[in-house]
Image (tube, rainbow, N blue to C red):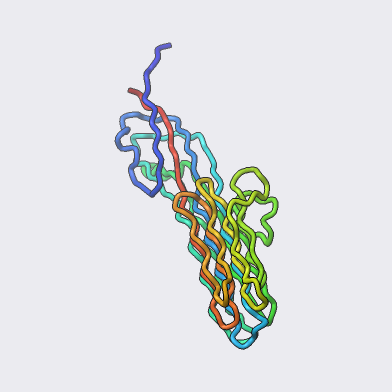
Length: 277
């Protein structure tokens, strides 16, 4: 058996790109290891406080979930056009405006993180895909019933009222005047706290704090917004290419709007293969 020397290739993609392996088009079909993650979920917005009801400030929004790293072994035809799409971080939820008594102006949910994928465009086939995380829900208050927003999780379309036992989950917002917990770690350490949620208002009548975003592979989740004075402060956005969740916005005090959530962090992809010399 003759030995054919090869050259190792490693490419990391932080943004979407087209025809990424054109320089290796003579390399034929190669086996490749592809790893990556989608975008983190956006934080939910805090609920606005009611105008003429001092005992009914708004609860906080939930933090977005963090995306999980996955890896696949695939074959790539280097003679084809190969495109890479990096999933965007989930959009930030909007804080609710102030409302009259019995208000219904809750914060909106944060957006889910986008999918990261590699595609053989010539053949029209997706070779590997990495899903994004779900966004946190907005805080709501209807006829005096305050409901903090649930936290997002590492898989799309789901949320949790408590992130205990969930890897990379964001935490729910808090009830009025109370602090919220941080998001969970992206590793297997159950319920490990990597980033704090927002601080509570510290007095009766303050809005609830936003929940912390779940940690991504590349960094911590965004902090939840704090309720300082009568203000519902915004959650912190996660850093790009971390796959982390954005923090939830804090609820507004009486007559104050809720804070916006923070945006999730975008995804990332790594591709490694050998080409003949």
